[in-house]
Image (cartoon, rainbow, N blue to C red; front, side):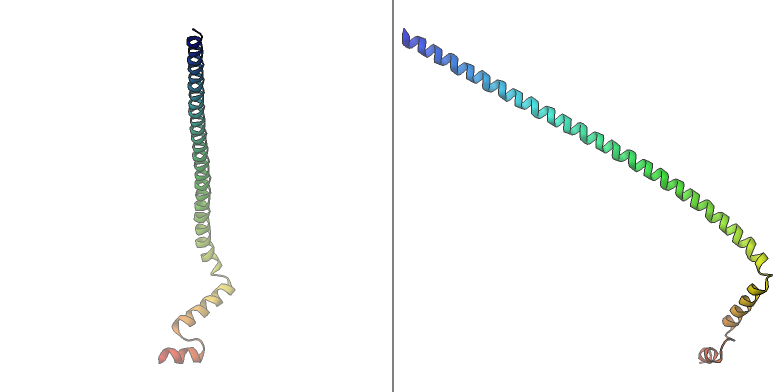
Length: 117
C-alpha cells in the first residue's frame, strides 16, 4: 500500500514537472514571437521614416534645381541684352579687336611665323 502511494506521488510530481516545463516552453515561445513582432514593427517604422526623409530630400532638391534653372534663364537673357549694349563701350571694342587679331594670326611676329610653318 505504501509503495503504491509513493509511486502515485512520484507520478504526480513528474506530471507537475512536465506541466511546468511545458508552461515554461510556451511562455518562451510567446516571448520569442512577441520580440519578433516588435522587431518587425520597428523595422517597418524605420523603413517608413527613411522613405519619408528621402522624399523630402528629393522635394528640396527639385525646388533648388527649379530655382537654379530660373536663375540661369534670367542670366542668359541679361547677358545677351547686356552684351549688345556693352559692345558700344570703348573698352569692350578694344578687347574685341584684340580677339580678332589673334584669330587671324596677326598678333606677335613669333606666333605668326609658327603658324606659317
